[in-house]
Image (cartoon, rainbow, N blue to C red; front, side, top):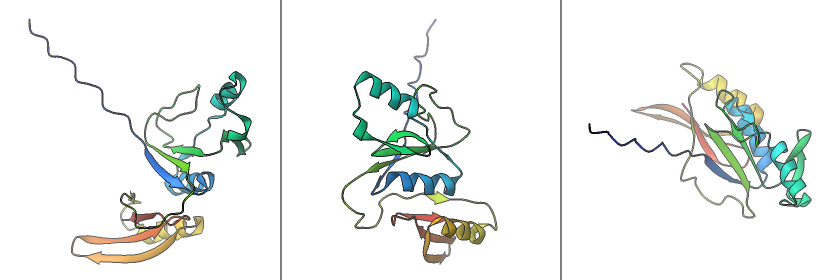
Length: 157
């Protein structure tokens, strides 16, 4: 009998965003997407206890230890590793970089709040710290181009 070889598992991925203040960006995007900020405090405590992570590589964030230079947000319905708090599904990871954003994004998120909810969603996002850059109306549709608090562009359909 011929057996078909098993297909390789799909590749796990996350979107990584460079940031001046990764924790502020995580708070913005968690609220914007209605995601959860990951809690990596158990992993951090374990690494500190093993001497594998220096204390200065951590900060207090939302009343718990967090990595100083990176933090992620994840979809609340997706699985995550209990031991590390790391999401195993849809995630955005914000990492501190020394240089500011200088040009147009080469990759951006499109948010789809639902039919007839674009303006309501844009107003909610502006209250969170986003700004409207421009309104686009083309033959293929309408959307808003917005920027997060650090100037990263995204669209609201």
